[in-house]
Length: 321
Image 1 (cartoon, one colour):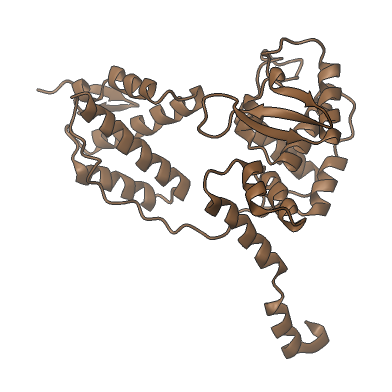
Image 2 (cartoon, rainbow, N blue to C red; image 1 turned 90 degrees about the vertical axis):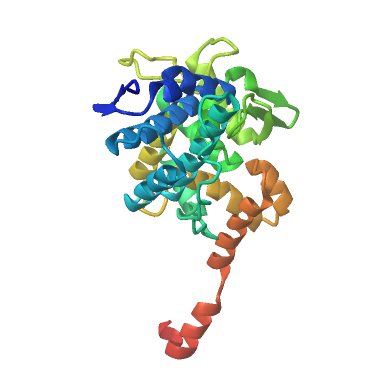
């Protein structure tokens, strides 16, 4: 009889020999993943094993993996969740096969088909919204200066929340007529991607650092500042950065159901493109590996500038259009 394990509150009949904690840990170690990524990998794998347990599957086959993905799709999970789960599943079973632990049943899974949109689901902030957002943060206290510096950095340099979270003080340095921030980008293991920081933004960061006081060079660039918080001085998580930006957007009156913290990155891209900056330069600023990803911003901007629909309406309704 196969050994069993408890996954969540479900008695799992999946064979522990194949899917033990050691096997999962070995897989994650092989990916050299950052702590947050490792946590995500582990969560996806355990969710899959919990599904197998609920279905009474002791030795999953290719069809079982396909059914798991279809279940997530039926539950209305986002394309990003489906894509990530599919990727983790394939890499996990590939690892098990390579180490002689289990068959690579994911190799023959159906190719994940998603209707990838040519535009973003969330809108960029407009120029007036971005200015209103920054102007709304008027405090001289540590948290206000930190939040304003973070948002200015996101708006002007297009940083992701994970890149803001990972930045250390030593990564921020003066380079003549501008400052530079070395960031640990998406899927990177080191802070080896360079981002320009304009002087007005650098001034906000330096004012925040001065008020914060002396910290070690390897300390987080942006840290928790709540005095009643046991994690004072600790690194802000990417989730915390995202929630802070969304909260500041709401307080300033620019938050809608069609924008999010990521809209600051959209703003940087669209503003640069609108200013006539070459798309390859914008790709470099956003640190996109694939130019097609940057082209989505071009499509977004083209839709906003398009006058065809308005011309038709004006012809049909005249001045009322």
